[in-house]
Amino acid sequence: SQELEQSPQSLIVQEGKNLTINCTSSKTLYGLYWYKQKYGEGLIFLMMLQKGGEEKSHEKITAKLDEKKQQSSLHITASQPSHAGIYLCGAVGGEYSKIIFGSGTRLSIRP
Amino acid sequence: EAGVTQFPSHSVIEKGQTVTLRCDPISGHDNLYWYRRVMGKEIKFLLHFVKESKQDESGMPNNRFLAERTGGTYSTLKVQPAELEDSGVYFCASRSTKGVSEQYFGPGTRLTVT
Image (cartoon, rainbow over all chains, first blue to last red; front, top):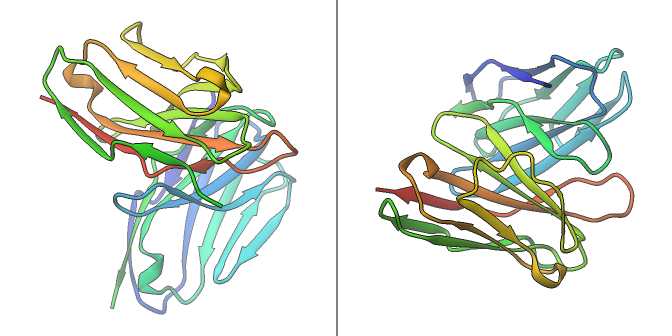
């Protein structure tokens, strides 16, 4: 069965600094989601990547999928307090299939 | 457009009791998913509805869990009888059938079994 490993598990970053979160899959990905969760809230969709080498950006967040479609990274530029939360990567094996989630990365921003 | 809603937001019950969780997906979304996160572990898939039919229920832990989606609209997830290990946060998500699209998640129901 497919497994996703996220690193680091937790991260404390000074406000204004850049950071990167990684997600590695045990199998080739059909699609890779990035979600963010704040305490007591649902998962907020950030981006979905499907093609090898694909890169997407939204505001100060950039996500990339490697050519082999087994690794993805999420990069935040000039971090802000609003970026704090739990970041989750999720793999899908097909167009409408379930999401297999990584364990998450807890991000804290230090003022 | 209203998002995915779940009710209740919190539920505290005693072991052996029954609890029913409800999920209202985004209007028009045929696909509805249930997931849960138990303490300290990853969010795990439970099951997937396409309209009123169960497409994939491979994640349902045992027969104490019963999910329904009458009429292909809202869905309920009943736990009967509840056990201590059922405690966690239960998420519902929905997605459109058209094309490749993200799953929209609800805020979750936090279930505590004492």
